Image (tube, rainbow, N blue to C red; front, side):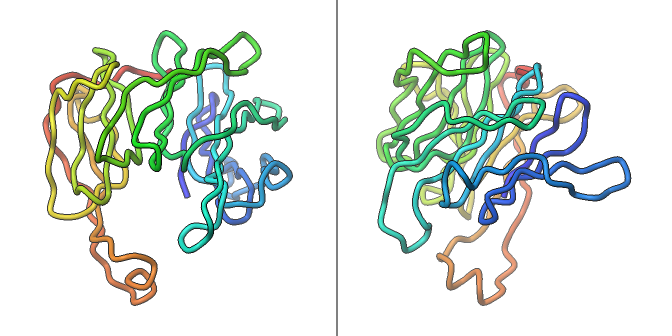
Length: 227
């Protein structure tokens, strides 16, 4: 479903419907790294890894699409593969990012907001608060820039939006198809890369429509660096 890199550079892959976190070994094999299914049988979604090698992975909490809504959870996977829940009651948790000062920000798509937590010394989360309301938008993938602002992608509204804490909109990039994820990169870190696709629901996906694109747009500030 989503990927990030472990502290040693190995790729971590969320096998969402299998409830597993996989790690790509030096020989290219995807090996089991952590079993997430014991915390939730619902599909697992996004991931972010901090400097200590802790991975945060979220489960949306219900069978999407088509299932009855239920709140989702956020799990911590430590560098030795130990798994524990660190947050719950999330309204369709989606993109996750960590700021340089150790604040974890998560998109709650169904609540139309970005929610923040402080990370404690053991990797647990505390001091939950609303980081920004996104009225009318359903934030999906997110990233943080060097000025402390967050970019979020929105499928239904076909755009990516840059906001500061409190919800002030700083910039918007409009596309001709749904925006699922965004990340800052490029030579100087100031290019916003967007994963976009024409979204018509699961039926369109099963029909084999190939409308996915990676788009690029200039950004006002570079990425914030490794969290």
